[in-house]
Image 1 (cartoon, helix red, strand yellow):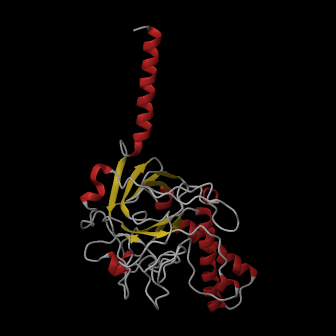
Image 2: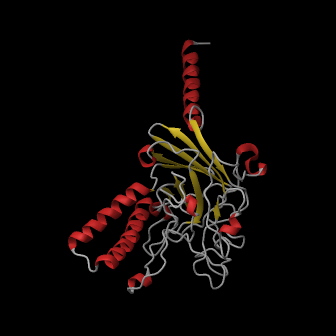
Image 3: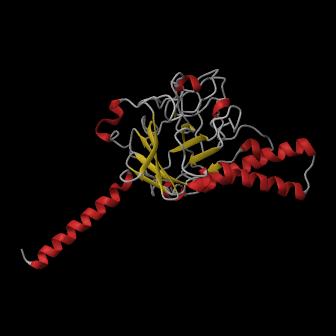
Length: 344
């Protein structure tokens, strides 16, 4: 073999090995911390929830199968795998009257769902918060109160600003009940407390990568105070994401009421704007599509009427519900991905 040809071949082989090593870095040589598994086909909320009448939200698109956690330098890489390939934002599809496209509005490779991960780091009864993010309309069990929450959402910066505003509104109202009208110094003090609470308790990932049916997101060790542990409690929920900038009419008119955080609601009947199958006379029904529960309780119970509090799953505790073999056959989810409609 001529020397030049041989050198070219060796260079090509070396490049191929390097590229293969980089692409397969995912789980090789990385320490697995824990895995949470969920059955396939349970993306129906309380059992009656139906997807919006949209081509980009087909059944299975928010059906969470696995959440894997891997220790990496300076943080943790989470991998969430769904039953269908994740729909990517389209440059030609406008979101609302602003004329902004999906790709402009959702810059992290996904736009149809939110993933909430509530973490109970101390496992102490009565410790931590039991309320979930605004609009989820769920209550965690007293023994599963969260100290930390990771919120993976298509618009993390906007979601953080929105949550800060909601928490600030609540904090001001509470302080006014205690002290009466607030002066500038007291108002600044409340703002500082809310800012510190938000930074310490809630993390919005911005290092995100979408590949097929899997979304990876990175959480630094500074947030958890180290790597997350399998003996902690984890409560995981999937909701539909809203990209539209809608005016909150009750707040605009000076009225207060339940407000959501980048979440699609649920209601009776079917619609393009929300999930269907909602219960009549239950405006606070949870719009959660899929969640993980420990043995002894079902998702349908947690999301149904007169629901019990939602308990977290402890990976190092009793066995968690495993995904059926059919969900993981061949290591790949459903091959068919829905194609979102193109904008005019």
